[in-house]
Image: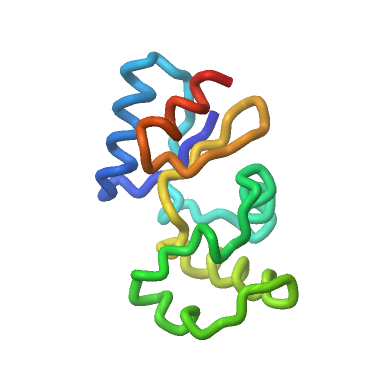
Length: 117
Protein backbone atom coordinates (compact mmCIF):
# COMPACT_ATOMS: atom_id res chain seq x y z
CA UNK A 1 0.00 0.00 0.00
CA UNK A 2 0.97 3.61 -0.36
CA UNK A 3 0.28 6.52 1.98
CA UNK A 4 0.31 10.14 0.85
CA UNK A 5 1.50 12.29 3.72
CA UNK A 6 2.60 15.70 4.82
CA UNK A 7 5.15 15.01 7.60
CA UNK A 8 3.99 18.14 9.44
CA UNK A 9 0.45 16.71 9.76
CA UNK A 10 -0.44 15.04 13.06
CA UNK A 11 -3.07 12.81 11.39
CA UNK A 12 -0.40 11.58 8.97
CA UNK A 13 2.00 10.82 11.78
CA UNK A 14 -0.75 8.97 13.67
CA UNK A 15 -1.58 6.89 10.60
CA UNK A 16 2.09 5.98 10.09
CA UNK A 17 2.41 5.04 13.77
CA UNK A 18 -0.59 2.73 13.50
CA UNK A 19 0.69 1.14 10.29
CA UNK A 20 4.07 0.61 11.94
CA UNK A 21 2.50 -0.86 15.10
CA UNK A 22 0.60 -3.32 12.89
CA UNK A 23 3.78 -4.09 10.94
CA UNK A 24 2.10 -3.16 7.68
CA UNK A 25 4.15 -2.90 4.52
CA UNK A 26 3.72 0.45 2.84
CA UNK A 27 5.43 3.13 0.81
CA UNK A 28 5.42 6.76 1.91
CA UNK A 29 4.78 9.48 -0.62
CA UNK A 30 5.44 13.00 0.59
CA UNK A 31 2.94 14.43 -1.82
CA UNK A 32 4.06 18.05 -1.33
CA UNK A 33 7.56 17.09 -2.53
CA UNK A 34 6.29 14.58 -5.12
CA UNK A 35 2.92 15.98 -6.24
CA UNK A 36 0.45 13.60 -7.86
CA UNK A 37 -0.44 14.14 -11.49
CA UNK A 38 -3.98 14.79 -12.63
CA UNK A 39 -4.17 11.15 -13.75
CA UNK A 40 -3.06 9.94 -10.31
CA UNK A 41 -5.63 12.16 -8.62
CA UNK A 42 -8.34 10.75 -10.91
CA UNK A 43 -7.28 7.20 -10.03
CA UNK A 44 -7.30 7.92 -6.30
CA UNK A 45 -10.70 9.62 -6.54
CA UNK A 46 -12.09 6.54 -8.31
CA UNK A 47 -10.65 4.29 -5.61
CA UNK A 48 -12.04 6.54 -2.87
CA UNK A 49 -15.41 6.87 -4.58
CA UNK A 50 -15.24 10.64 -4.05
CA UNK A 51 -15.18 13.82 -6.07
CA UNK A 52 -12.26 16.29 -6.08
CA UNK A 53 -14.12 18.81 -3.91
CA UNK A 54 -14.62 16.04 -1.33
CA UNK A 55 -10.86 15.76 -0.79
CA UNK A 56 -10.07 19.48 -0.97
CA UNK A 57 -8.76 21.21 2.14
CA UNK A 58 -10.88 24.32 1.82
CA UNK A 59 -9.31 25.98 4.86
CA UNK A 60 -5.98 26.47 3.11
CA UNK A 61 -5.09 29.94 1.79
CA UNK A 62 -4.69 28.48 -1.72
CA UNK A 63 -8.34 27.31 -1.57
CA UNK A 64 -9.84 30.77 -1.14
CA UNK A 65 -10.71 31.06 -4.83
CA UNK A 66 -12.14 27.52 -4.96
CA UNK A 67 -14.90 28.36 -2.48
CA UNK A 68 -16.86 30.01 -5.28
CA UNK A 69 -16.31 27.25 -7.85
CA UNK A 70 -19.32 25.17 -8.85
CA UNK A 71 -19.27 21.52 -7.88
CA UNK A 72 -20.45 19.24 -10.59
CA UNK A 73 -19.41 17.13 -13.58
CA UNK A 74 -18.74 20.17 -15.77
CA UNK A 75 -16.19 21.52 -13.27
CA UNK A 76 -14.57 18.28 -12.15
CA UNK A 77 -11.51 18.72 -14.40
CA UNK A 78 -10.97 22.24 -13.09
CA UNK A 79 -10.94 20.98 -9.50
CA UNK A 80 -8.55 18.13 -10.33
CA UNK A 81 -6.21 20.55 -12.10
CA UNK A 82 -6.22 22.80 -9.01
CA UNK A 83 -5.34 19.85 -6.75
CA UNK A 84 -2.47 18.85 -9.04
CA UNK A 85 -1.17 22.43 -9.19
CA UNK A 86 -1.59 23.02 -5.44
CA UNK A 87 -1.12 19.67 -3.67
CA UNK A 88 -1.38 21.40 -0.26
CA UNK A 89 -5.13 21.38 -1.00
CA UNK A 90 -5.34 17.57 -0.95
CA UNK A 91 -6.84 16.05 2.20
CA UNK A 92 -4.41 13.80 4.04
CA UNK A 93 -3.36 11.15 4.66
CA UNK A 94 -4.64 9.13 1.72
CA UNK A 95 -3.90 5.42 1.88
CA UNK A 96 -4.24 3.26 -1.22
CA UNK A 97 -4.53 -0.43 -0.42
CA UNK A 98 -3.20 -3.26 -2.53
CA UNK A 99 -6.73 -4.60 -3.05
CA UNK A 100 -7.69 -1.47 -5.00
CA UNK A 101 -9.60 0.57 -2.47
CA UNK A 102 -8.43 3.70 -0.73
CA UNK A 103 -9.27 5.73 2.37
CA UNK A 104 -8.61 9.12 3.81
CA UNK A 105 -6.88 7.94 6.97
CA UNK A 106 -7.85 10.71 9.37
CA UNK A 107 -9.25 8.26 11.92
CA UNK A 108 -7.89 5.08 13.43
CA UNK A 109 -10.92 3.22 12.08
CA UNK A 110 -10.18 4.38 8.51
CA UNK A 111 -6.54 3.32 8.76
CA UNK A 112 -7.52 -0.05 10.21
CA UNK A 113 -9.92 -0.60 7.31
CA UNK A 114 -6.99 -0.92 4.91
CA UNK A 115 -5.28 -3.35 7.24
CA UNK A 116 -8.27 -5.71 7.04
CA UNK A 117 -8.20 -5.86 3.27
